Structure formats: structure tokens, C-alpha cells
Image 1: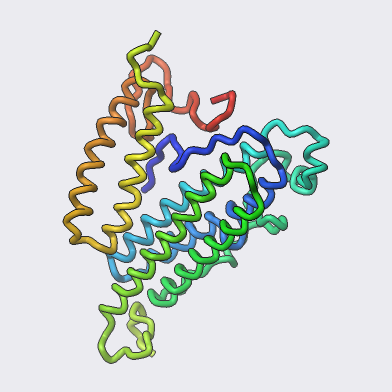
Image 2: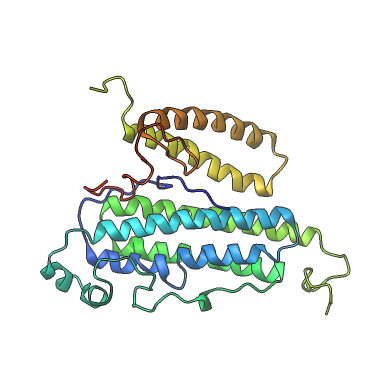
Length: 200
Length: 88
């Protein structure tokens, strides 16, 4: 099960609201390469992962992604706090406001609601870990793009932290893929699904 | 009033730092389970973290959902949910 600690993994203390920045950062809450999709992907994949060490890694990274989801939600909340109606309209937040007021809702920057179609759980360790490496890179690129769009140091610090974690997770998933490959049957030249006893 | 107490913010900061060392080491050890340096470092930071969390929970109530409640009222959900909020 999960237990909770009442703290953020990295501090978020934003003093200046900025609804335009909130709108793009929200994509890492419920967008195509966001933290919710990441957590749900790794957590779901662990059930069919036959290698205990790799299943444990999936569980640990899924857990950390939930902490990142909490950080992103906090960033969005602080960026939209105490906005005037005029700021909401001028900073392009009116379309979000009409549906969600200042609630944090899992959607992409373009307003597409979160969907499980953003992720896969294929029941094949090699397929899943390859997706996971791609997912970490996509999230890293998204944080790179966010860093080009924001200039507030209070926002940049936690976004940089999140970006660095994507790089570390990519590295760990690469190592996990190597661990799986090392345990393959020597006749399995083409990396057929080692979790499906039916073979191919 | 509480002049000798380390501030809540300072303690949380120190807990955040030591916890992060452990968060990163945990993933490293998941794929390098026999690395003696990482195992020793994990142990060291685990001890540091435990002392800090005990100190925090004595002054400010539970940090973890399994933490202590010493007051006559339930403190867990009283505050601390909105970082940087005036309602915190």
C-alpha cells in the first residue's frame, strides 16, 4: 500500500501569479507526457513484470511520479492564486476558468482531458521498458519546452528539478532493460516476449 | 517563544534534502544492488533522516500518515496541505 508524507519532494514557493505559465505547465499534470500518465504507466506495468528487481524499480519510479504530480499541481495552484478577472482574460486562462474555475484538472495545455490512451501496459518487459525510456525522453523534452516559455526563477527551479529526474529515470530504465536482456534465453535473438509462456 | 526550536521550514528543508538522497539512491540500488558505496550511503542518510523526522514530529506533529498524534485534538489534517498558502 501507499503511505503519505505531508511535504513536497522539492519546495515550490511561487510569489508571482502567471496564468499563462500555469496553462502550459498544466500539461505535465494531465497532458500526453505528464506525470499522471507516467505514474499510471509504470504502476500498471509492474503487475506483469516477471523480474522482481525490475518490478520494484517500476513501483519506485511510479511512486516518485506521484510526488511529481503533486509538485506540478502545487505549481499550477500557486501560479493561479489571487488572479483578477482581467488577468484571467488577458493571460488566456478564461477557457480553463469557465470549466474548472481555479481547480487543478488533469488536462493538456490545449485543454484535452487526461486519457489512458496516453500510455500502454503491454505485458512484454522489453516492449514496456522501451516505451518507458521513450516516455522519460518525451517528458524531458516537455520540461525543456516549458523552460523556454517561463522566466520566473521561482518556477524555473522546481521545473529544472523535475527535468533532471526524467534524465535519471531514463538512465535507470535503460539499465533495467539491460538486466532483462541479460536474462533472456540465448536462443531468443529477436527479443520475443519473455513474459508470455506461449512463446511466438 | 520557541527560540530554541529549529523552525518548521528549516527542518522540512533538511528532511527534504536527506529524503532526496535516499529517493535517488533507492533507484540506483534497484539496478546496482551490490554497490557497497551506495549501500553505506543509504544507511548513513537513513539515520540522518530518522533523527530529523523524529525532531520534526515532536514539535510539529505527524509528517507521515503513520506518525504520532500527541495533542488532545487530531492534528494530521489541520494544516500543511497548501504549500505557500495563507491557509497553511
